[in-house]
Image 1 (tube, helix red, strand yellow):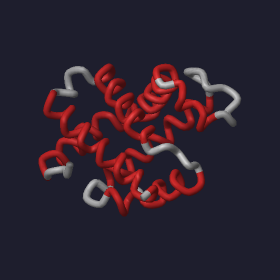
Image 2 (cartoon, rainbow, N blue to C red):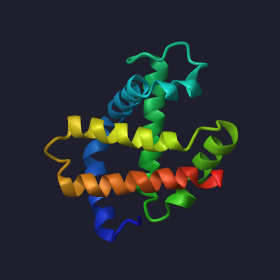
Image 3 (tube, one colour):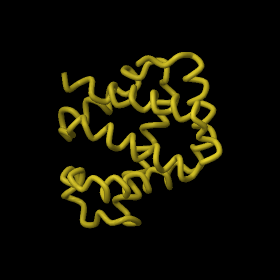
Image 4 (cartoon, rainbow, N blue to C red):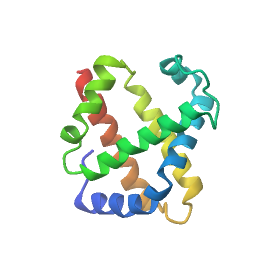
Length: 143
């Protein structure tokens, strides 16, 4: 599912609106993921506190959204732009690639909550395609 030039422009424009609140969105998406998909907590068992509002959840939410910011910046070459993150998650952290889809879903839910007027069906579709391509790029080194 490739991104058209129109999709890329929509994603970039929407991201420009989202970016100032990226840390909060990342925290909320991660908190939601842990609550709705508790099996995802297994990768974070070394954290002392996985509850919403905890420092580790806030910090990792910030990292996740920083990764998305990198993806937006490298939207024309997601596989190259996310290579280091893909290798880290595949070889060191050994994260199940299915979790990228779960996290993407939770990010979309939180974006819909924070930006109900801006997340039109057209924006939703383009951003969902973008997140699916990010998940593919992140999963690339697992093959």
